[in-house]
Image (tube, rainbow, N blue to C red; front, side, top):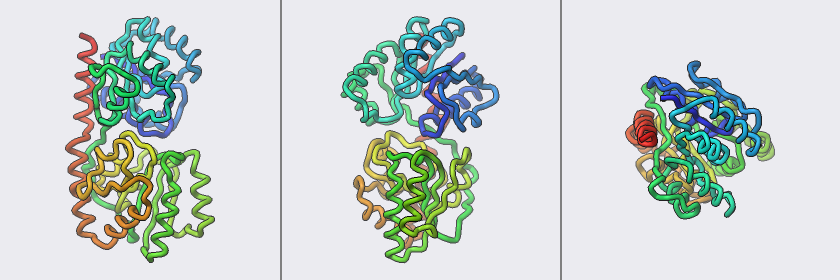
Length: 350
């Protein structure tokens, strides 16, 4: 099968990473994959050498449609798989005019969208064979807000590879981790509050934050301003965050908005108990007393209570570690996702 994957950028992000994962998995199964994007980024280094990369000339939604129209008139694909709102919006009409089969993939909840964005998405979806949603809540929002036909909607979870190398490289110090973008939506300043709680309660811990982004300078400054340097380690962006996860004891995702977090899946695959707030699709990954703890939104004190519990009860920590790894591998494997994608692609061509 000849497949075009379209995404706005190959910069850091869960949706971008899943698009790269999909491209690599499809290539391994002998599909011919091309990936097109408007902004280059570090994730391009993770793509198989067999995948053709197309850098679009512009990210402008008008200009890029003309470029895509010309490209699709001169190149034929069995399926175009567009990830996220920008890609879906710009490929809808060029794809329709060139009689391509379109699959859209909604990753975020799109709570930022205005009424006219919802109208645009409803219009764009008319040209798609299927609209894949990253979680059940995502599917519910697409149906209720954008009035997308229920028959076009399907939930296919993001995926993670099984970690056969499950040997922990533990620091002697209890390590609380995060891996992902440094973006305001992730609310990383909560780690400062948690560190202050830990200092006040004399917990000897390290906050290991892996990643980079717009908020990096702000967060590092907050650490210095609050005299918390001994509690924090920043690694910057890592194309392979494995070494970071293997040092962690627990993983925290403090996002104020989240659809379906690839970072939670990655951390869970390393057997890390997960702590996250009750937002978005987190409840489909974080199960209380099974894979970690789901906490009322923005309740930092309750978040600290769970940290303190796991810090002092290592038997519970080990129990959650094993159950988390088993749950993630059973429900969110690459094999499960790719089989569902191929079924969707095949159905779209009938």
